[in-house]
Image (cartoon, rainbow, N blue to C red):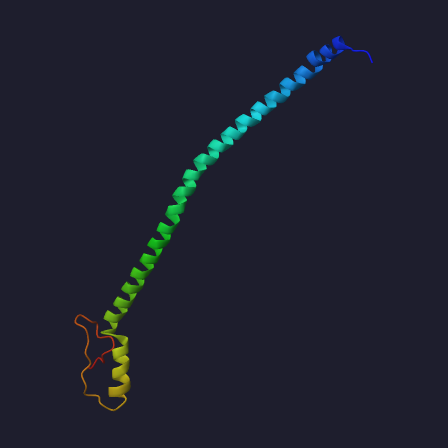
Length: 120
């Protein structure tokens, strides 16, 4: 086996070196792309952390507004009826059904007296 040193140098200098330079260039481009992706991911974490506390806050606010709305509706209905609906039901079942039409029905002040009979 003869040593072909000159031919090996020629192959290394002319064929392998440009291919290796192109390979290293592509690796550098890949590394730069990975660094940009990492920076983008790090920037995206801030948005995820923001959403992480914003969503429970919004859910809490929605729940609280639902409770307030239900309370306001119940209060409005109670005022329009002139008192507590259970009290009106009890008066109707016990007093009126028992034949006592002379009893007084307690109503809240400022009520529209919607449950009270309107006599001419």
